Structures are given as structure tokens and as C-alpha cells.
Length: 103
Image 1 (cartoon, rainbow, N blue to C red):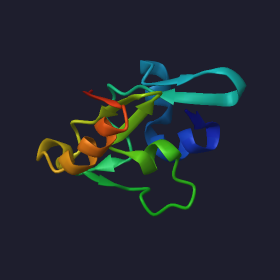
Image 2: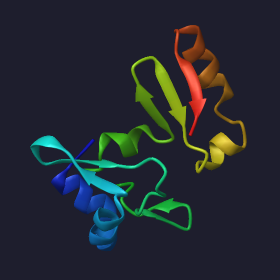
Image 3: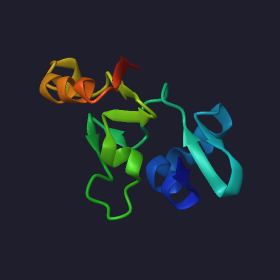
Image 4: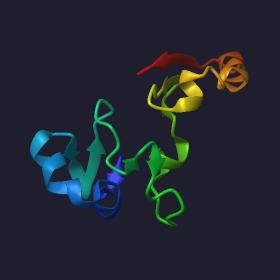
């Protein structure tokens, strides 16, 4: 979930395009949801253009994980996920009762 300010920050010049294509969906209270099937508009050549921005959204800071209750979704667009480098962390999360799923 993103605030309007965060949505503008993440989408950059692609804001209107994402709104039209439903890649970015407005929900209640001025919040927005970025669809997980959409490649992040802030990624340029696999590098985040807003990584060091002080108002980077929580969902960006948690990447490549997306946590929904006791389910953790992994983004296959992350090089560490593709290279199986997350295994030690995922093993600990499984022991804590989380289910791990790939997007």
C-alpha cells in the first residue's frame, strides 16, 4: 500500500501510464496498490532509482519479500532470489511458521 506521494515517487514519469493500465490502482483514503505482476517502475537496469530516498515506501524497503499474514511472497525479479541466496533467511522464517511462496 502506497500513499499518493509514495506512488508518485515510485512511478515517476510512468504514473499516468500505470494508472491507465491498472498497474497502479487507487484504493480508499488516497492510497494506491502497485500490482505485483508489474515490474517496478523505479527499476532501471535492475537498479532502484529511489533506493536512497528518505521517503522510500516500506514495500520497497522489504523487497524482495512481500509479507501477507503468515505468507511471505518472494519476487523472482531479485537476483538474490534467483541465485538461491535467500535460503538461510527463508529457513529461519519457515521455523517461525511462515509459508514461503514465489510470485
